[in-house]
Image 1 (tube, rainbow, N blue to C red):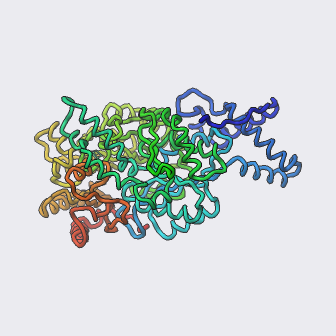
Image 2: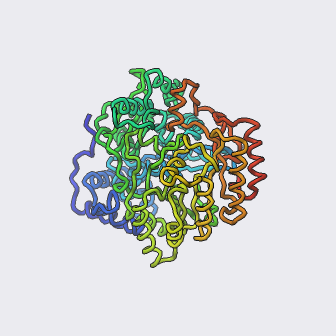
Length: 622
Ligand code: SF4
């Protein structure tokens, strides 16, 4: 089926001039300096002021439509009414929600910007910012809800937005830990606005996509001599693959009434395309849009991105998938994320509660720890293990955030310093920026393997004041915590405890505060637990780890990790993250699927609180 474009329309030169002038004014007035000199991505050499034929026709047609309905506006109230009517005729409301993963009272979690959701919407956002959405009707993103916790106040806020805006589309993003709440949000949407089209995507949907596991297993089977030990985890038989099917969204009949389209994999370009389809179908409903998506599948096969859309075809009574092109998305060819519509401000306590922007310079991690989805995800979706943006692209985003009034930056990369050459280039640019302006305070997370004394000094000189190390344990199991094995490979005589102690002291010398996450339930003995807590307590006493910088975690098998693949192969029942998770408020992670549950978690917390005191992270209860 051919997409429906604007009807042919004669555009008088005067009308075209007015539209072009309005566009130029909009770019000058509404965009920050750093956003004004490119069209689709920084450095593309295209002018955002150029009005495409499609946008020109839409704007002129809207003017004619509104004038025909209301007549010429000759007074100020008439012009205001006309503008209101024009806005209403042009737009259809869209709401985005980042599903929280904790409830009221949680103190161990770190709320922050919903960067995965913002990356998913960034292409759409750019179209909207420069008024180049390719449709006769244009999405109006009425809000991006990013509640720190699932509370009754959040439910009220959600319902208020639904009642006020009656969104045509609601997009929800989820992590496995927040999947239960994502489904509850979808339930609220369908209860309040049964006509709304609900889109669901996020790391959880990526990780319960049976097609990705099947494809990865087939690739491993065909690898022959190139196959390494870590690949074997991805090799699944037919019975094992069948065990995944019940976990996929839409596997349960009731989910087919709550969710209309699921995104698994890259959704950056696919989301904008789905909204184009919605715009073409208006006025519409979910079933009509799904029919159009199935009929127009080839549109998606041309889009950058790896992964698929899923929907439940009521007519065929089966889950259908619509694959993307399979070409990885190039981070340098994406616009900056739009952080201007979030409902909750981001202020990191480690930066003195100042406005903090989160930036992702690189996706993926070179290590392969069994409990972490960072590297397994890449293999599941046949992506490069590390997908790095260029230092220049990242610097542009930093300049934009400064213009927007952010006072600190936290890099969301799982292992920010893993590529030394990239980091050296980036730090050079950052040093140039801060030599002309006031220093920018920033922080990152990485491993103790990937820093040294000189590097930490240089990072501190460029504004770094905080580094979060996933140390996990004083004596981690090297099979599961692969970064430890890697350290021993490059430096056989190095002990993990000594390494962390050295790194923490180098940080203190450089003026960098250290944060760390501890992970329990990795098979450690009670004595090893005590040694872990004592090590951290010692570094807290030594002034390396400040108050509130230690996070407690219980190991849990998350979909999309090697640990998850091992559970599939073991035949043990797979955890279902539709369930409401049981968590201790002071822990970052839930524990009912863990080796440590019930009273043992409380005992562990008491032990940690006793040994670590003020070092423990204590977020103000949400
Ligand atoms: S080093 Fe960290 S981010 Fe990388 S795989 Fe291990 S736990 Fe994940």
